[in-house]
Image (cartoon, rainbow, N blue to C red; front, side, top):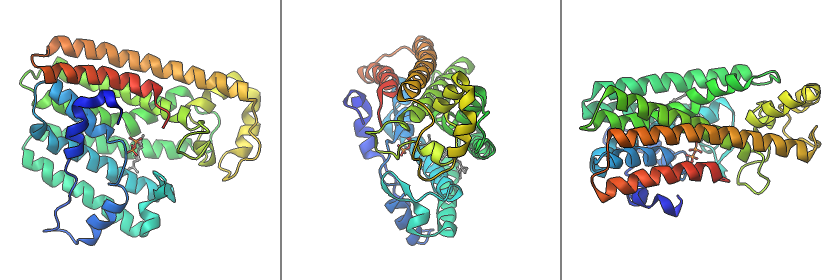
Length: 322
Ligand code: GRG
């Protein structure tokens, strides 16, 4: 986590992701701890803590929601790796590779069950309802992405629909949770935090697709294409050069791509276009943050620092390379 996100660093480090074994076979938490719960940027808990602390809430009050967000994210990763037959995640073996598809699905289910148990203990039905809608979105988003796979005629709007459901929905929930438990709760605050999270999430996905073409990055180069997915960058490239559609169709889904059917400069133009598009969504998020600040002005140093960290987070997302 970047140093300008200082106000949440401690909360994130203290974030408890231990699964109690009084009701569960210890082998399942063991497997989860070695795989989907290990590493990761912890962006979703960071959003819960930052928005909540901006509203004057304590990290203790926010911790169960931050934990639920990371558990839901991790459950979705476990299932995603099975759906995609993925072998590596975060430079390590995926949960399905470490165990088996069957065990990975069950371990993901256990995490979701923990979320239900622990959120119901918080006693706020609206928050549980919102998260259940997020899980629906994650499933529908994954399904839509499956339908898009192999298609070279996919549109930017279709990709935004997938991003909203697969990526932005949970990030948005992390922000709305803070609004729901804030003493300053209002419908306006709820809507604005939702909108902030959605725009941040869409931009996050666009930058993820840009990073897919970072040769120095941690991730496999052009992973989306190899998985049969035309992402934002290639979608833009095909919009500018429709004549390349047949050549892209031929390399789509190939595990090893020898020659890319575009000049490096052509790809660079599309990367810049998607960076600009992501910046426009981050600008929308920044505008929402201004409105949120007016609705809940900061009264303490922690609150002020948390708003500043949220602003920095938007900047960080536009610059991140991994
Ligand atoms: C069981 C909840 C559940 C869902 C099942 C498989 C599925 C339906 C949904 C897939 C959702 C999914 C994996 C979305 C990807 C979202 C995304 C951008 C992941 C990468 O997020 P980072 O970069 O990951 O924050 P780290 O590694 O930092 O945690």
